[in-house]
Length: 135
Image (tube, rainbow, N blue to C red):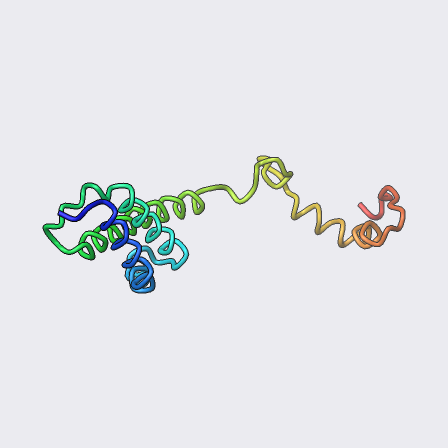
């Protein structure tokens, strides 16, 4: 059984030498490279914290691969949950006139554009009340 210090050195060496490979596999699982990097970092942080549990029955690299794949799967679940939340969230905060029930904002803007008031409003000209002919 290797000592905790030996295990720590071996974990660090594995991280430095094989980081790109771990990220590539995690990216295949997660689907996004940045989240894959986070998963690999999380996995190695967990390995360092639990290094005293490593018994040495199997290669350290096998233990690391298992940790990386598990972290990537966890990250994929989180990413999928966040994507579903973003997809179901309203695009607005609900405070605009478009969000009011029965609002005809598009109709009102079109009416402004037809009357010429919209142009005057955008270009800073004074806006007068509509005459009965303009209504």
